[in-house]
Length: 189
Image 1 (cartoon, rainbow, N blue to C red):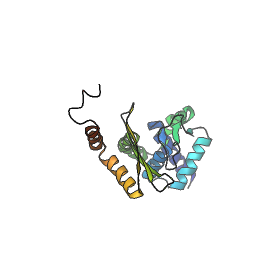
Image 2: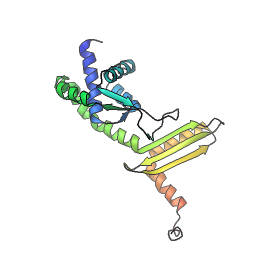
Image 3: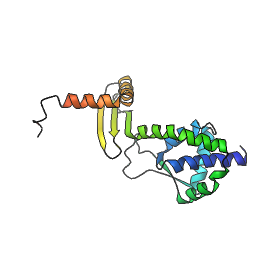
Image 4: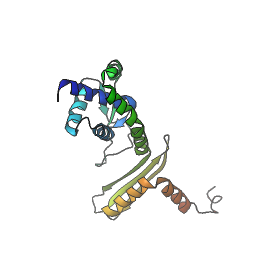
């Protein structure tokens, strides 16, 4: 990869970070690879360089509710003030077709990121042959649902997670109806 291509790819990453504060490393990876301007290895190398140069920051936030596959809090990436200055001063040097693509794609990425941050469904083995499923729905301010289920096998865990991701609203309404059948409103007061 030549210097111009490296600089363009760094600007793409800065642009993405400038659009979404606190994007997870996984989300940033997917978005960067979706651009098709870089592969995974180039992405990892460039993100490390940006962080090393103080243009981007990667960290685990205190109280991070989103967990990775190992049950650890996810790392999030942010543009630093220095990175914002570089982006502002050099953004116009990114080829017009690249900027046009990024601007157009940003709307679909924003929609995906919002859904990922509001609807979470994960599962992990519990060490005893079962799987712990975590279903979460966040309205942007509060967790509306934060449910943990222990299920007997991986197939069931994957199915529950897939169903939650595709039919969250229906599942939420069904859960409310199941736990609060008609005629019980007065009993809980």
